[in-house]
Figure (cartoon, rainbow, N blue to C red):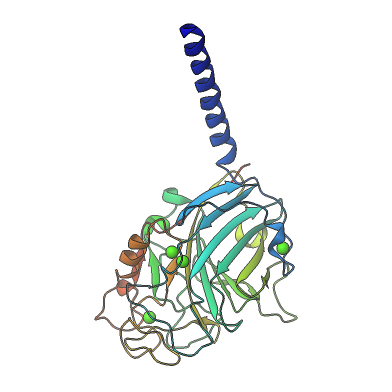
Length: 313
Ligand SMILES: [Ca+2]
Ligand SMILES: [Ca+2]
Ligand SMILES: [Ca+2]
Ligand SMILES: [Ca+2]
């Protein structure tokens, strides 16, 4: 009897172990599926993880579930008092999948009161620690002498050298967006106009959930590779991210520094996709308060707040 029990236990253990190894190998990579950017997120079929600030792979989708109400930026950020904003920079979910032509992303915010209000920056490090370091660290900042939304996001945010981003994407106001290369050159633009870049698609499902499609000829082909995603959220202002200030007012959130003038070193970011809300606050607080406007040396540096997505071949 004892032998049978031991035999059965060993058998069950082996089955469990082999299942684990099999599923870890099989489930760890995104083998994606086609998404229609059609104002319905119903084609995102994966199940999100139960725990906040964790990720899973489900039905070919990488799914990160971000914590609720961790949208406090460098620790004490408040929203502008104008009711358009609500707490719309509270990131709730970020998903990635792909097919043989496009990378697809889903961004879920806390619902804004006005459709134009949320802003999301996505940096993609496509070559990891093996890439060129010491370059492309600032996330498409733009030129302060000539504020032009096409040039950048003006978020005062940079990443560690080993996270240098080959692509930076801005997604905002439910259907607008831009993609830059590592040097800040604009590669794609969608404004809902005739000259939108073909194939770069952005639309919302019920305002708070945004679907994005980007062709590989713009973003690169992730299949068989490991990409790292930096996801940062804030508020829209004239096509770029809204500046923080020391004091809260109708149009500027408080808890930062200065009077809400473009380029002040506080990161204009309320939330990051990050495994720990404490780590997120620590990284967003890593800016230098007393420095000239627009000085990249003073910007907060993201070192650990990123998502690692492994793509199947
Ligand atoms: Ca859809
Ligand atoms: Ca959040
Ligand atoms: Ca700032
Ligand atoms: Ca977060």
